[in-house]
Image (cartoon, rainbow, N blue to C red; front, side):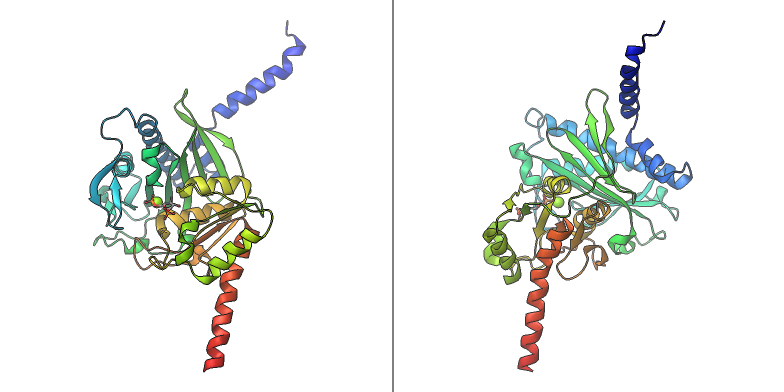
Length: 357
Ligand code: AHM
Ligand code: MG
């Protein structure tokens, strides 16, 4: 005979079981409320990204023990930056999981000068993956958090010349984006245009399991995240913003050297991340197509905003694959405050020009 006192236990058991079964691929189908071919494709792409993340997480978790996992390769990438062995490994992992998948026509990443084409996947209508395989590479050798960033777009045409020109479109053309944070646990955060959702890798299952749904970024937070070592080479407007937060109560600085970790903190707790243009890098450091735009898409889905300081980040149409943009991203109110310093400076410059003309 059933003991009624056990009934609530049974409910929580059902809940835990249901939660454990909410894998990424199932979640994508639920979000799109469809079992059509597009939904199936996007679900399959997300599963492949999850597989890449698991392979990368496995190598990172044992990096100090594995031959050839840490340190530099000795090469310089297309950005002029020294390539780490982990950058190269992670880049190849993404290629390997999408080869022969029938899903993605081209992959473009920070580590490759030109997109990597998979012609057999390229009839019109397939997809493109843009990604930063290891974001925050300088953290790898010291065992601090790093990430991967991804963006999924519809392939436009067949691009037989393999120019990659069809990638040069604004952030609004993204179908989905997200990141993986390799921290104390491995967390995958994604948006397919229906809010922002978090999955945590359960090592005992080897699966990403839903851990939070429909995350909303607070409208304001205390964190400001910027490399203040660049103060000397920042524009006066950015310096004014930094002076402002130094002189007002209620702000705290957090900067990890890995964008994904800093953005994850801000997504959950609010605040603003800035990588502005500098004297040495007038366009800033971060790349539009596989760093800034995917994060802007995601943060806007969570109710936040992203700007270059002069225009919404999502509106920027790049002229080349590895284009950089200044980035101000995070809570709506905090982004608006930082941007107001830049726009005030623009107004003052215009007034000065008027007076002098
Ligand atoms: P990476 O993708 O080559 O690692 O470069 C991007 C990283 C970001 O994760 C981080 O926000 C930024 O570079 C840090 O740069 P800096 O050391 O100039 O502050
Ligand atoms: Mg990067």
